[in-house]
Length: 286
Image 1: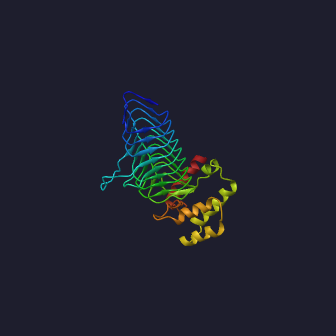
Image 2: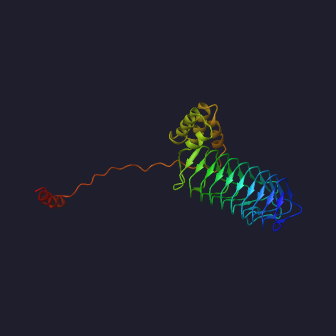
Image 3: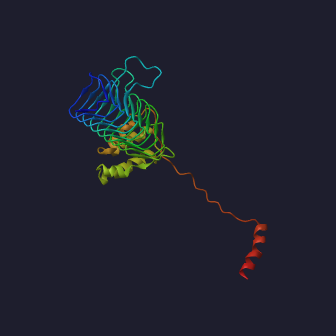
């Protein structure tokens, strides 16, 4: 264990083997850090944080802060963190609003500078959050999702597994698994095919998801018919997970971006313009 003499570490904190604490870092009472965690200079780990091994809290990150809620009770929940996460500079993560209702972060997530997780968020494993992404309270993000820079996610929304959200998107409804969301419009523009391939999904699984995508967005079916069709045509693979996610929705779902209808217009010059233009054309030709 290595603790800088200018760090403030509570004697009631429990630190594992090989933990490193930088200058001006603060670890409050009741904190539990697993083996080989790193708390860099100026980082603050507040009471109520329980973290597994190999987590990195970079400069001036603040994890375990009290919920930003006007009705915050005296006793609040915890922040539970898995292993192998990286929280870059100025990341803020808040504890659960009530006892027994915790904010949870899984394993091996990469959280870039300036990201915020509100109270009671549940983050899966293997996710990436780019600079300045903001999650309101009670947001759920499933495994291997990618949330780009400056994305704002409304409270209680869900982002499905392997979904990719483009920069500056405003997320006000659930984003189903495996979808690609355009940052400018905030709408779905297809499947996250690159992410699916990188995660090891087979060509057959990707083909099934493409067929499911057409059923959901292109056939014009009623919602229950969509769920019934997916259940009847697909009995395994990622489409089963997609249907389960859709069946559990309560806020509605982000819609597909549709191109505007195309109108072909012919520009025809009036008689006067045509008459005036004709001599000049003849003179140039001569």
